[in-house]
Length: 177
Length: 322
Image (cartoon, each protein chain N blue to C red):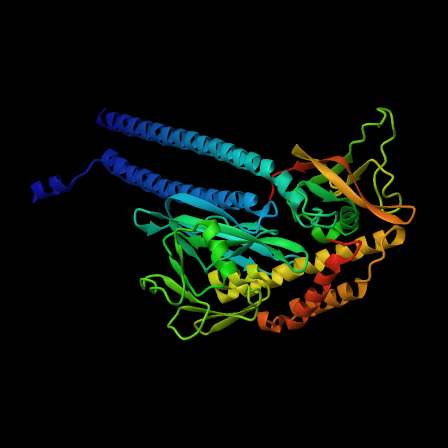
């Protein structure tokens, strides 16, 4: 009888301890999931803040910006001639800006809705509609800004600057700046 | 005797409870410590990333100088790291934070390929000044960022007017301007002298009137600069960081030269006649030999600098490239 009572007590203690361990495990899991969700929220917030600044920053970086090549210092101006050269050397840059794709779309007010989309290459430049600078798969969210897209043109032997409106679009996966 | 035996007797359930209880307590303390540690790592990593994002506005625009203030909630040590790995090298940022009077471990290092931070090996404090200047060699290559802790005070003695104006315009609270004739600095500051003859921590020897070329002597190290923006880099950073960032900047200059070469061929075909092709090729090959030689330092950049000056002249050609 005494033996049985002792066995019962051991069982009771064991069950109690198992319950305590399960309680701690559940509390721990809850805390970890809470921490992970707040971490993800923080990461998203940081990425969002970054992306807003990133599109302007990239358009202004020396690889794209007009500098003083088109007379005076221009803000939000992309040098089309330089950018097509960049497209030719994009392998060197790889993930330099930390974006998954970059595209420049020319906006012509006379453009017909059903006009064909022609991607810019060294061969057909400048008779094209858009220039995809990185050809990797588009992932993440898109951000864009309007820019002046400038190039040198020749009319009857005279050189002049031709600037038009374009949209600079980046797709941002948020891996790195 | 019998009594003594009875005194030591502990029931099995008590023994079991004590052992398992101790294990549970040990595990709880172990996981809690790890949890706190990972929390610290998370916080320091977040701070590193935030610093990187805060630097973005400094890199946009044409301004000759931009200032920004970085404030952290706790005492922080920022370690800007530079390495030359890859096509453009990398700028790393690692952070340590002071918690309960003890420095935490490093968080995850956040790295960037398109940032160039000039500072000491690490900077410490709760408030930091960041300012940026464009590096043009001869075309714009990048915006250089200088990181200075607010509590560290500098005293610029006998600086050229251009430098004085720039510092005054940026309105620093920790950089004081003194002319040679005026009272000297209080003594707690880091004295930066633009003329010899007085006891200083840093000497700047300018070859040009506007101090766009010269050398900076700090202790036993001598750093050579070729633009005004590099002068600040040499003043505010240590030797290793300066030499490493300079090579990273030249790597980018080299790639940009390739772009300008191709732009030149593109525009020459249809429109412009530009005669800088040879200079660009020479510029690229000189940079390549400088960057690929581990022994080279800022002192060996004279040839590259003189070609850069020649290229600067092309700015006035009818069909300028940059």
